[in-house]
Image 1: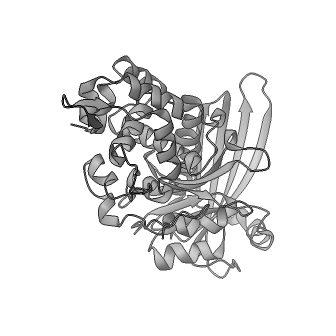
Image 2: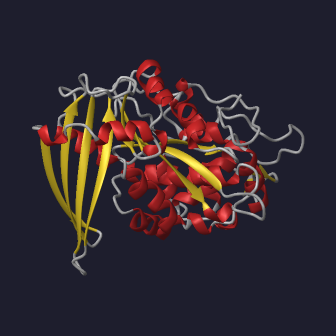
Image 3: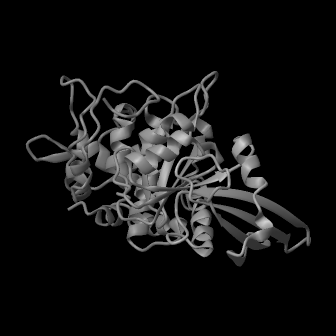
Length: 383
């Protein structure tokens, strides 16, 4: 059964060896066609390749993908494997309705896994969720998507969080298919759960760095009263950006008979952030506590500070980009697996552009749009 847990999907998820296949078309062929065997007119993989190429060219909706396909020349449709008609071998593009039906029914867990980046060997992986606000409809809540991204800004995978539950229930399911040996997983305070720590250390042979806030009252109080005034291991950091000057002081304690009750905890850190607004001069102070299984030999105060800051990569390089470059929150895709599959296609487009050396995704999408039927296919390696 597909590991996608938001809606019923009886399609088996792709195996790990399927995700390692080099060709995009070959990877997509491992997905099961969700359509009934009767009435198929367009090749399943060809429709998915059309959607991938159109999104890389800047398409933001099913209608836009359909328009891109309808305007595509014969040579482009041939490269995508579109169906042929008449004795002259004329290529016929799938309609917007056909594209919508197939994307809405395609296995979301499998598509996300096949189009994502393998995190094996990465230094860090950040986990966080985002709601696609435009997918809210009447009494149906917006689709909430839990995603994982590497420290290099490459999306690994995502899952839709089932309604009437939260991200905690999907954390292990999200990361289960991947080799996370020696990878450090970061997450916000919601995921500071003992089961998550045991899953990462025992099952995945990975490490964790979790923030601790008042939702974990006992643990938070244990960290707050530690002898921070005696700390000698410190790190100072300063940065500017987003209209503010920020100074961070990181203090680290080794957990040895300190009464910290959390699985495999080896170090705890206290991070004090001093922020000054450059325009108004307003100053604020914030204190954050962090717990990790990394020992002092594995993570110095400086490295811990970098790992903690890497959690923001998923906000800055995925969620923010999908919303600004693709207008995700304004998208009205609501039915079936549409919201999560369209989000997967956007993440795949961002991954492909970053892998090609593009740092500014908005500028890269404009560059793709100048030759929309050639550059996206070349970028994706579609012969």
